[in-house]
Each structure stands twice: as C-alpha cells, then as structure tokens.
Amino acid sequence: MQNSRKQKLMIVLFILFGSAVTVGLVLYAFNQGLNVFFTPTEIVDGKASTGQNIRIGGMVKQGSLVKDGLKGAHIEFVTTDFNEEIPVAFTGVLPDLFREGQGVVADGYIDADGVFQATSILAKHDENYMSSEVKAALEAGAKKQTKAAVNL
Image (cartoon, rainbow, N blue to C red; front, side, top):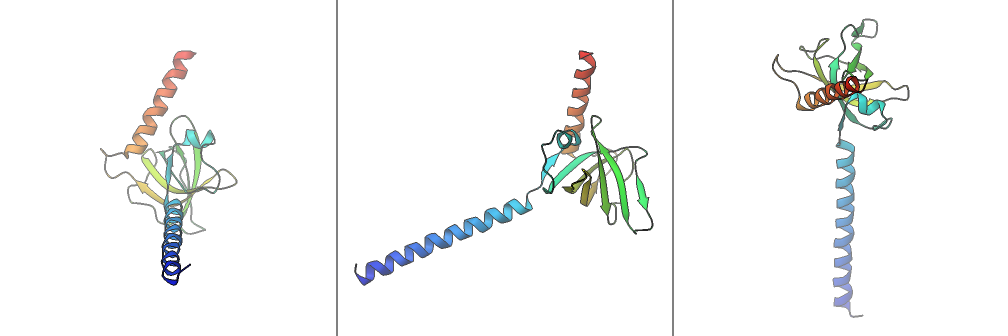
C-alpha cells in the first residue's frame, strides 16, 4: 500500500473510532441523567428496578408525614395514587408548599427495603396547579378503582 493511502486509511479509522467513542459517551450520559416517571401502583407492580434513578408522583397521604428532629432535616411520608402506597424518605429542605394531602413529585431510587429514597422533592405550585404526570396518574388510579367497584 502506498504511503498516501495508508495515511488516508488511518485518518478515516481515527475519525470512526472518535465518533464511536463520542456516541458511546453521549449515550452513557443520557442514560445516567434519565429519570422515568412511575406511579406507586407501577412500582408495586415491579416496573421499576431497585437502585434505578426514577421519578415518583402522587399525593402525600394524610397523617403519614414524620419529621425526625434528631437527624436534622430527615422526613418520611407515604405517597399514594389511591391504589397503592410507597414509603418515601428524604433528607434535606422541603419546599414551602409541601404538605399532606397535596401532590408531590420526587426524584430518587427504590432501596432494597422498598423505600423510595428521594434526592429532591417538588411540590405543587398553587391551589390550581398539579403536575400533569401526577394528574394523569391519579386519574388512572381513579379509573382503576371505578372498574374494580363495578366488577364486584
């Protein structure tokens, strides 16, 4: 093979290798930053795996909020879509509008004990707003309850 052909071949191979590495890094970064939304019913059904970064949405169950003053800002509560319930643990500062009976969206992961370990909490923004994800999940839960009641 001639020197100029070898040189062109090496350039093409270098560009292909560089492109493959770039695509691999982009896909890896995308996968790490991807948070898929699940409802408590979907989590109980096993659609979310342990340790996977996910987003959970629902309502904060009345009477479930426990603040642990000994550990600082450690909070535990239960989120529900009115079909299933998932316990949530969070350490940090809660949004001002966070309270029982209100919609909530939390980012985090499910630990080995089945507790959702939240890394961030988003609460509703005013009395008329509810996240479209939470609203759809609650409507689906209400439809499921209605079907179950009709089948009895």
